[in-house]
Length: 249
Figure 1 (cartoon, rainbow, N blue to C red):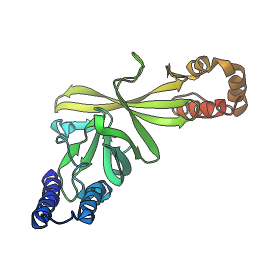
Figure 2: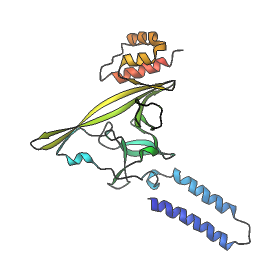
Figure 3: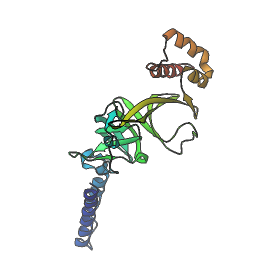
Figure 4: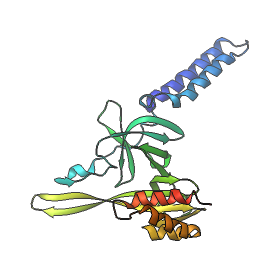
């Protein structure tokens, strides 16, 4: 793919040189220069299948296939490809089949009409969306030492404050008579960004402490709405608390 892109640039450059040589002593054809510039600028806007910039990266290895037995999978929500948008290296690519490997925090693509899979360069990914979830990349330079590690975070809510979820999958290997079995264990970690500070949130108490200026109102809201914070309901309740906080002045 990179070869095609390079050849296009080479052809355009050659065309300009030939035109210049043929017309020495005559006024420069500015329309040709403008056309070439427009063509180069439009390369980022063509369908993703035709753009080599997106489909570049090292091969993705399905490490789970080296185990005799596997429970679960390493991807976000589903083991199959899902369609999403990717903001990559300054360009937005829409409706791209992708997989997000939570275990190793890698965004995986398949070459069009090919079984070959690659993993994108994380540092070039601004954000991506999948199944109504928007993941943003937190860089190593983000000022939150000891709180936010570099990687992709699911934006649960964004307003005056921002609530993030770090999707995590750990692996557990078990030795059995038939060989080594691999299991994926999923968990979530939550973080609140407010006034330039980041707070880890493990439950209702942490969120109330971070939003202490409206603690009384939030307690009343939690009680009135009968919000639950058990494992399966905590995330939705944290989002509702963050949304309600933004309505308070």
